[in-house]
Image 1 (cartoon, rainbow, N blue to C red):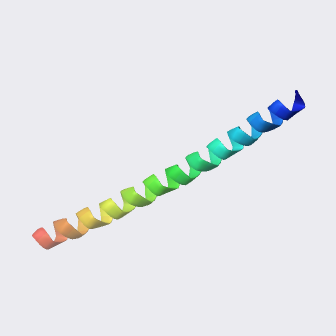
Image 2 (cartoon, rainbow, N blue to C red; image 1 turned 180 degrees about the vertical axis):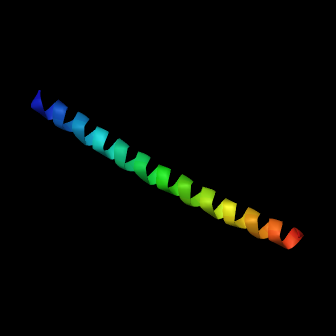
Length: 45
């Protein structure tokens, strides 16, 4: 029974880790997109 709890906890930790990685990737992509857009707007002026 304890074994199942351990597996569930491991799964939860893994899920949170992946979620955090995914969130930071999304944030990084958003910043890159913002920089490209700003550069494009400045070129258009």
